[in-house]
Picture (cartoon, rainbow over the protein chains, first blue to last red):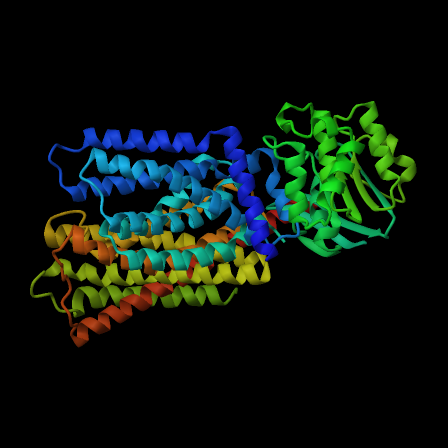
Length: 205
Length: 190
Length: 224
């Protein structure tokens, strides 16, 4: 039970920070709408639904990336990961709290982006919405883990896309094809792996 | 409290220190001195359990009994002192959090500004808040890295008062005069 | 160590020579694809060796996380380094084969090739990670975690690429017949053994070099 309390305290801290700074979510929203607008002009008129759907997934991945590069900014600037790692809570709780916060931002951005997509292009079906929801879980878990790796490096903002994008390819395949079972499988594998691996990423001992 | 034998730390090919022995009993005070960049901070990080030693044996107390104050005060700048301490109070599972936090804020002269963001504070006030955070869970072992940094005269006196408490101390400083007479053990880096 | 490397190099040279002789003089010329099909005996063993490298690297990564032995970190790094080299060769040989068979340099219909592109991207980022973080246990930990993600990504990506064909590229290329004749299979096995021996040799050579480097630096530090 203390595990859940730790996770809740950490996730609440991130939401509170975002409420104060109002940086991540507004930029994600603007980015995803701007990206969809660009796609409208990039696609030839009368393009099929499938092509537009593919671009929706590209927009989601890059919007998530934008949020993920910001995920550990507060920790990095103040060396706060040290303070969190020293606390007696399980290290994986730090990952889960952060991943939940990332997930919240991602979902919030999509609550605007998906209706916008439906209006701009050729509508939206339930399967796609379900696929997006499943993909968000995988994106948030792997992205949070790799985000913690990237902030330890010198090339931070540059490093995260390099680490993350190859991992996102299966998500895009599952999403565009609407293979919900595949996305669920991806989530199952990489949520467990990220959860178990986070401790090693933030702690030397 | 701390027992270290021929402790060494190396980053890749760069050797930070080697052959360090420490025997610190409960109630002891280890003063670590040396110029900037001599390895004081790395040693404190190793003793805090934040960095792994490359060689040697090291026995440390349990994580929840250790308090570590680094170069940075280790508080969130966009949160208020109250929010910061509440977060850490939760993570350390303190019973009667509110009373303890109030007492500390009062003691370090931060009660009046408890609802203001840390980013508006001077460096000295941030350091005071850092001290509150590190004392919050009543650690028995305290590792302080340049604790007098940025503190004004009143802050320094408050910190002197903290050292009067019965705890075990490891203090790294390049300017040791203020705590010289408290030291029971000494370690000088070149 | 002093004995093993020359022996290994000798065995490797022998196997490579035998493989090349078999490929060009023993294996029958393919009825459909002709002479160019012989690149199959390079391409597929190199690809399989590359998997072996990544697998070995992940195994060493796991060993590192269990034992915190710096040597395991170095071994994991060297194995993945070799894996990326073999992976690059897979892309090149695959590309040549595609050109010879279908007249295009790249075919999204060839699962293995696409998978290697994904893996190549993934493992190149491994080097970026290593160059970006200072040497030490933190970097070793992260590298190990990333290497383990790599072996999890291989089957997941493979499945994804298989799935993607159903909606991107419905035509199935079947380039090297369902069954191999005995002589073909023998050639293939010798070639695979040769590539694996090449990996083992290069792995030992690179490791030996890295270890000598480390010793020299330690000595220099002691003298300073």
